[in-house]
Every structure is written in C-alpha cells, then in structure tokens.
Amino acid sequence: MSCAPDGDLPLSDDLFLIAHCDRTGRPRLHPLVCGVALGGGLLGELMLTGHLHAVAGRARLRGRRPPEDRTCRGLFDALSREPHRDLSAWPALLSRSAGRAVTARVLGSGLVVPVRYRRGLLARGTAYRPVDGNGAYWRSARLARVLDGPGPPRPRDVLLAGLVEACGLLPVATDGDGTGRALHRLEHELAGFGDGARELVDAVRLSVGDAVLGART
Image (tube, rainbow, N blue to C red; front, side):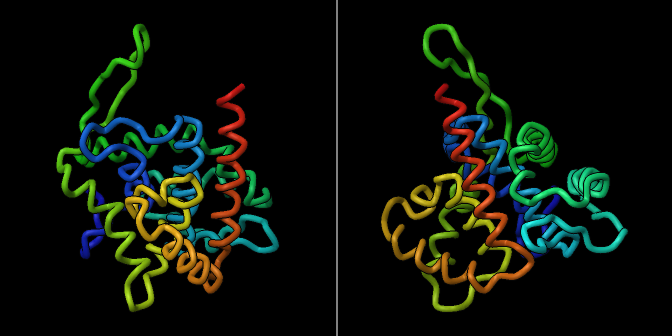
C-alpha cells in the first residue's frame, strides 16, 4: 500500500474513497465527474511533491527528476511533453486516464474490491467496496474535523478538501452539518495556499460543471 508514515494515502486515492460509498462502494458521482476530480487529484499530487506549480494560469513543471509514484510519473511525463498548456484544461483532458490509473492504484493497494451491481433492469455497474469500511468512512469524516479544528490544516488536507468541494462532495464529508462553516474555512485556507492550488480547484469546479452538462445531453 502506498501510504505515508502518518497514515496518509495518495491524494487521489483519498478522493476516490470519498467519491464512493463507504459501505457499498457504489459511486457517488457520475463517471465523467469522478474522472475530472481524479485528474485534478493527480495534478494536486504533483503540486504537493513540488513537481508542479501554476504561473498565470499555466501548468509549469519544476525540475527534471520525475516523481517516485508510478502513476504520478506518467502524468509528469505527459506534462513535460506539453509544458505550456493552461492548467484549466488539464482536469478534463486527464479525466479518462486518471480514472483508470487511480482505480488501478487503489485496487493494487488492496483498499477496495470490485463488486458488480445492477443499475435498473438491464444495466450493470461496478462498485468498489472498501475492505475497511470504517477506514473509508474516516477519509471523509476527518475532513470535517480538519476544517472545524483550531489549528491550521496541512496543505494536503486543504487541497483535498478543495477538490472534494469542487466536485460537490463537501456535504458528504460534513454530513450536511456545518457545511457553511467548512466552506468558509476552506475559502480562507485556499486563499493562502501557493503553487496554484486555488487555480486548480477552480479548474476542477469548472470542468465538473461541463461534465455534468455533458452527462445530461
């Protein structure tokens, strides 16, 4: 399992678990929206490791040494081939590949197991049921505590909360109670976050809106 010593998962893996029900593993988001969110999550991972920042809305790489994580390394290579693309374009461009890559990483880590389920009379879908349901629930519940706590949250948690809010899942993390307070705190923390985190969250929010419209047509 790719976990930091303090129990952190990769940012996108956390986001994946929050985007699926902690009991059944069924998706809480449309696949297009989930892919956009996970694309933003992988970009966020590069920001947190210092490999990516945003300058005037452009995604810029830092250094030539690729990330250690194989999934992030693939994204780093892709960005290195198109280094001047607008940051706002990348979450949507990455939506399909990010969905596949993060799903594979979460499955490979043994965090979830795939389960087929019926959607309506004819269609079937794939759920990703957590091996540890309580642990999966904690991934979202802890965000409410982070955003309601007295001390400054870590940059990683601020970025995760921003992405969760951008794809419409902040009420899941707060159980609908205190969402307004959490959003106010989040806006304050994002305002002080460098490296283009605010731009990334805004880009994901915009791409999510486009994906929702696309899903309805």
